Amino acid sequence: MSRLLDALVDICGPDYARAGRSVDVVGGQRVGLVAVPATTQAVADVLRLAADEGLTVMPRGSGSKIDWGTPSDSVDLILDTGRLNGLWDHNVEAATVEVATGTPVRSVQAALALRSQRLPVDPPSRTATVGGMLALNESGPLRYRFRTPAEHVDRVTYVDRSGVAATSDGEGDSPGLAEITGVITSAVVRLQPLPALRRWVVAPAPTPVQAAKLAAEAASHPVSAIETDLPADGGGVVAALFEDADPYPLALSWKAAVTPTAPSWWGQYPFDRDDVALRLSVAPDDLAAIVYALADAAGGPVPVRGSAGLGRVHAVLPGALTADDLDRIVGSVRHVQLARTGRVAVVAAPMPLAREVEMAARHEFF
Image (cartoon, rainbow, N blue to C red; front, top):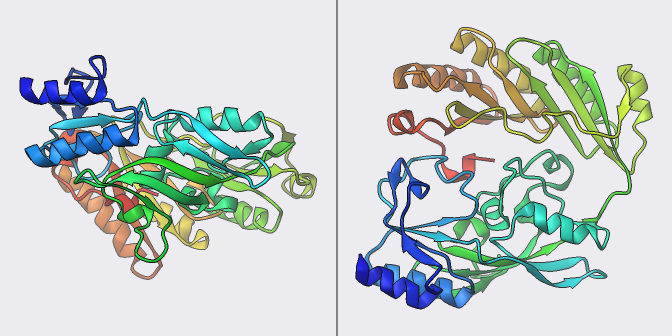
């Protein structure tokens, strides 16, 4: 361990390589080493050392989703991207910029706003970095209009697991984002103008059927996002976001007010780290049926939140469920989905439970 730590210090600097601490946990286990490289070359050197020594490496941005999906059996080294930070070559006219992937998405948006531009993404993980967002293609409400983050990427610089740096534009023999198994260090992304005016129209949706009806109506208007929040105790709502577009025709139809501020739940996950998070993806017209099927299987209403306009939502189950109960609930919902296009997957769960059930693959997170 001392020899490996000395080698990492030589690569990253004395303050940027260390033994793992109590906060450096993956899959419920403390990791032995943490490296924080500042350049693509340093990332390559770290990964080459790891490959030569047979070390298992986990990249980490903010760590907001590090334990989603199938738990890692063993991780020897965390490669922290916190020093891969900043943006450069911002071409306002061409609407492109290159961003280091350890940069928080919020910081990127704040910098771009100074030139009246934005990256049209809004990942619900509040501390999400650009790299973490791209690695999992994490999308929020704006996916309805602008699709996924990966679709705004021109090319990326990355280092593969053996420590070889390369550039990918997704064309020819170049791998797409989903095929990159190493560490993305920077990305050239395409930008959009920052909207001058954002307004929301929010209406009550007492039932999933009513939520689906309102969402279908909103889809006929020039909206940027259509989201629903359906708490277990009732009081559900549907909200539509208008950006530089007239919200009043929909507001009149819904008999709802227009507000310049988003609902408090907008763009946030409905679950905590101690909950079980399910990802439901169906055609928007089938969303109500799947929500009802989930409630029947769980023995009562289940909180659901997400894009009613796309039929992509998260549902919350208690973290205290047994593996058998969770398997039964998920199996029941999948049975209902046999006649529909879509999927249900367990995205996150408390670690003991996550080790006993089938968890989502990375492509099923978003």
